[in-house]
Length: 196
Image 1 (cartoon, rainbow, N blue to C red):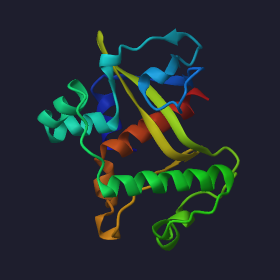
Image 2 (image 1 turned 90 degrees about the horizontal axis):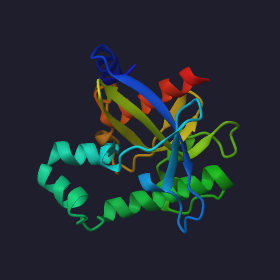
Image 3 (image 1 turned 60 degrees about the vertical axis):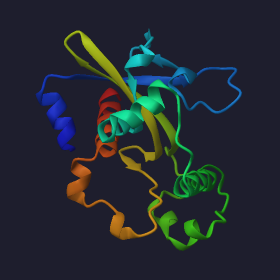
C-alpha cells in the first residue's frame, strides 16, 4: 500500500469515494469536473465546490511552481503543448482505440515500444478504459475532492501509459511509493473495493 495512503489514514483523514456520472447533452467527451454529477455510494447526490477540486496535475503544478500554477489555474493562461505532450495524447488515443475497439495502433512508437503487451487484451471482461474517478478527503470541517482519469483498470489493477522515450526514465518501485499519481490511484482503488 502507498505510504501516502497510510499517512492520510494515520493523520485522521476520512476518505469517501464518489460515483461520477457524465452530464447529458455534452458536445464533447466529459473531461472537466463540471462535466459530471457526483454521488455518494448510498446514491445521495453531492455538489462539491469547484474551488476545492484538485487533480494530480493541479497539485503537482502548485508544488513545482506556484507562479505556473497561478497562470494556469487562476488566470487561465495555458502553456503551449509540447511535442512530447502531443505524442502522449496521440498514443493515449491509440491505446484507447486498441482496448475499446480492437483498432490496431499505427504509430511506430506504440508498436515498437512493446507497450501493448503490458496492457490487458481488448475486450477483457471488467476492464475500464479512461475511467473517471473522484473521492472526498475530509479533515474536521474542511474537505477537498481529488479527481482524475485512470488509463486502464481491471478490478484491482490500474495500468497507466507513460510515453517515455527511454526506460531509464521509468520510476523505481521505491519512487512509486512516494508518487502522487500512484497514491491517488491506490486510494481510489482501495476505496472502490471496500464499497463492493
